[in-house]
Length: 191
Image 1: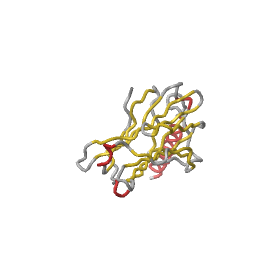
Image 2: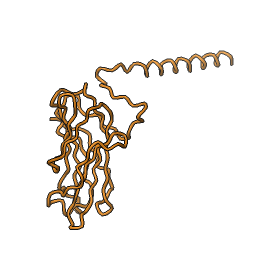
Image 3: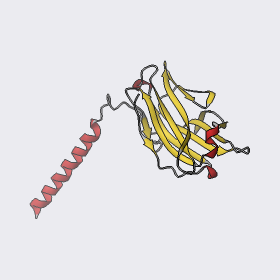
Image 4: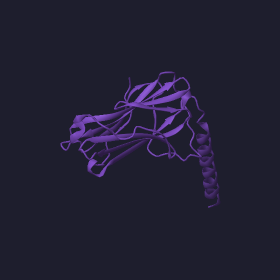
């Protein structure tokens, strides 16, 4: 098991409703069958003490990815295509004072599957804000591709950095630097 990136910068408050998103690149070539990782959002109370969390597991299963959620026993999203997906958590207080969470996985705005709003455990009733969003329990040698912004649909490409040929950008930069030096030397000679 490995730990991955985390974010503690959320300022969202439960009193306003919390919506947190992260963008995850899924490419079947990067994972062996049964490789998995989890993404978790934890909640604090008003004293900034940990209360509970909503965990979503992503696991490679044959030629798909299967998403499940620890609080939503009937939830199962099947991801068939390699792409970047939005993982969205929404928290709110119910009319009965219970804390509810809904997880939705989207593909460039198109909803793939959702848990619907489900009550969290009773410890969550005193929740006030987000503690962290964390990639954890990574049981995949490749790791996890996390994006802070959703890449443009027409230009994004999911690739394995361990096997892809990334030399083109370096060649272009080298050519630009050499051209700049050429014109600089030419200008110095003319002075």
